[in-house]
Image (cartoon, rainbow, N blue to C red; front, side):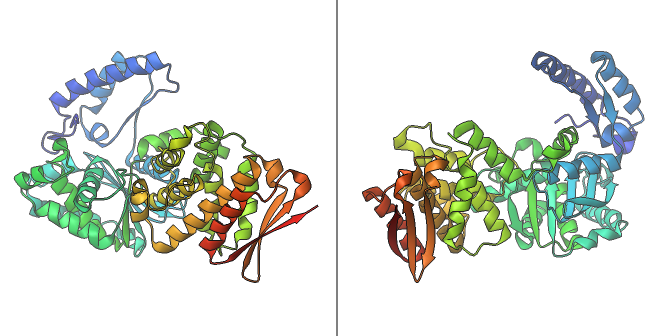
Length: 455
């Protein structure tokens, strides 16, 4: 927390102490980058540096310490574009208004199906807003109202999503997660309703410093910033009339990275890309998941496009515990999927997929470790996950994890019965474990099980 922009509003200059610390810190980053052979390596400077009179001198000082390293001072529009690109790389169909709050500026972006339509940069970063208002929250509210009134398209996101980027907004999310006992400690793609976000912002904006210090989940270095971030959020909730808020850990840095990715990589579905990556690293046969996807399609689950996508991802995740100890496979697979670091997976998707894979590895339905996933899902999603999980377990029992053996089997529904057809010449048979697991799939669907063997 260098706070380069502290005092910029009054002096027009970068904070002297912040400059000294920044030069030291950047020298350290440069040394790490060289040791890692990082390539490309580039420095991006944002609002404080571009607005300060001594910004060019600061850049020259950095350049002297890091000869040959590109240093780019981003215009506000470019900062907004990169932030949007970072969010979209994990949420490709993002629809609504993106807000990226820093110390010196607030970038606002209108997104329509993942495409930047409009953008604006405002002098509403938490440090600058505190300086402009001289620390008075009432004056800060007036400033935010005046500045946002100059951006008429902010209201175009009515009923859609407000995507929040930046450390001060993430700190607000941590407070809410702690207060509500949220079962998954991940801010990225944490989603709350408009009313919850409004109440959170109201509580934080109206709290004393001592009260903020007592709030659970708060980072002390953010305490001074939080009331101003809350003032910005409360006003933008009103202006945009957004229906919900989604917090993003992705932003400018991820946007910079995605800009350097090949077009075919940028075009990938991030959830399915993550699932295929995990299947490659932990599974045994990358040819099996597509076969499982086709095989499970016969369960007649009446899917929406998003549910179909989740089923495809589940098939890719279905062998992630193949190399784990058999006594711990269910729990290990559950946690691996639930807590995966990939950014293109919503919390609902994490919970659904983790529950599917735990059931595929025969977790007991009432196992304590499944509680976090069940809290994040409605009953219909839980039932769908359990059906798919036991169906995948049956598929692995039949096939031994090989697409060739799976090809000798098929599922179908006829007159209230779940029919398993087996080709005897394919090396599969209706043994005790097959019949038992077929029964579990049928029971989950409310059907009677039946197996047919053909020569």
